[in-house]
Image (tube, rainbow, N blue to C red; front, side, top):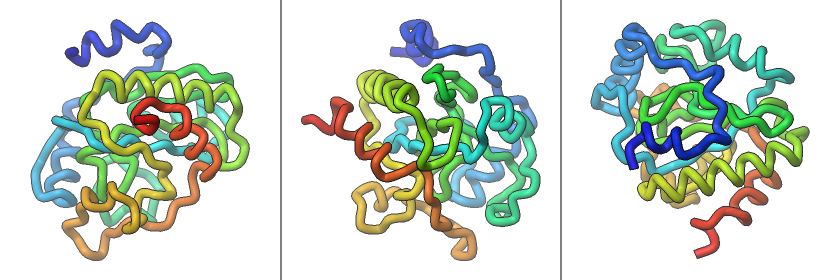
Amino acid sequence: MTYGDFYENAPFINRTHERIPSDYYKYLIKQYTKENYGKPSVYMRSPQVLVIHSTATSTLKGALNVFNSDILHGRKDIKLGGLVNVSIHFIVDRNGTIYSFTPLPFVTRHVIGLNYTAIGIENIGFPDDLTESQLEANIKLINYLTGNIKSIKYVIGHFESNNENLQHSSLIKTKDDDYKTKHRADPSFEFVQTVRNNIEIYKN
């Protein structure tokens, strides 16, 4: 399946807010991937990790305001990693609507150490207040992703990204020792575990 077919065969993915990366974004993400992973790249060839996030914003508009710039603003905690802005592949709104933001297979900056191989899903809200509709939407989207992108091996919460006791940790890359994964608290363990309990790759 090509990525064009991937979206065409998924009418449940709303493309209203999809943002095709600009030439400037591609330049910045190449710089970012070279500095942090040792090789400049705009595309993920065989993504192996899927990371579930929550935005810490209460509205879709608030999240889009953060993601719509090419350049990082106001994030001193991750500024050392480079100039390219944080971004994401999919956003799930409070009512369960699934939006494509940065189309696959572009690399986005959403998880330190894994961006070269990680697809990201943001859920509008805070770790402990995500909705049942969002839970159902994550399960549906992730089953579709893992069913069509066979290279995906791990589904994790952002809070698990730097856990050296989990299997995905062998994939973590940080070229600069001063730029390391900080502790993240999103989303809740219960949300992520319920998703994993209801997706096909964890039933095998």
